[in-house]
Image (cartoon, rainbow, N blue to C red):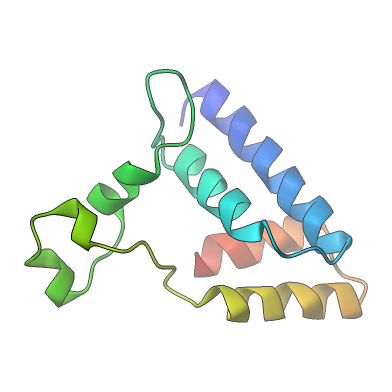
Length: 110
């Protein structure tokens, strides 16, 4: 991962931490997808997260492999967002919501 992508991934991780710590989960999906894009170098020529590229590198179901038209595909996380949020809520409840713990959950389940 190049240096700027690493910086942006770290920035998104900090956004995620702030949202989790404040128990504001409404925009979490956007931050998680941006983090994923930066972690995997899925960016536009302008350096912005490119969610379309997720279709090219992300895992697909057998049925999705047969679909050629991207507009018919849907991005979904391996583990449902509600379950990931449950992990985050547990961290907050147990006063263990650190950037490192959040990163571990994301990298393991996203």
